[in-house]
Image 1 (cartoon, rainbow, N blue to C red):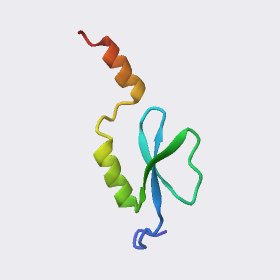
Image 2 (cartoon, rainbow, N blue to C red):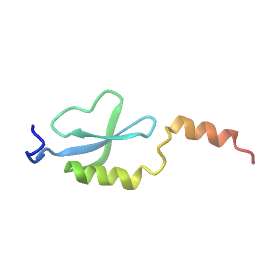
Image 3 (cartoon, one colour):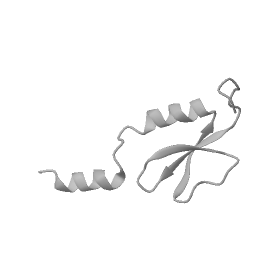
Image 4 (cartoon, one colour):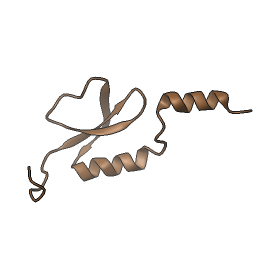
Length: 72
C-alpha cells in the first residue's frame, strides 16, 4: 500500500499481560500473548483510544515493583 492510498482496514486494540497496548488488523489472529481490549475501528480511532486509556506507559511489572518499594 502506498502512502497515498487510504487505509481501509479495520483494526482492533490489543493488550498484553504487561498492560501495553497496540493495534492489530481485525482480519488476522491476535499475536501470541495479546488479547482484545474491546475497541475496534479505523487505525486513527484505535490510536486515539489508546492515547486516552494508556496513561502510564510503564509495564505492569514495573508499576507493581515501584508500588512495593515506595516509602509509606
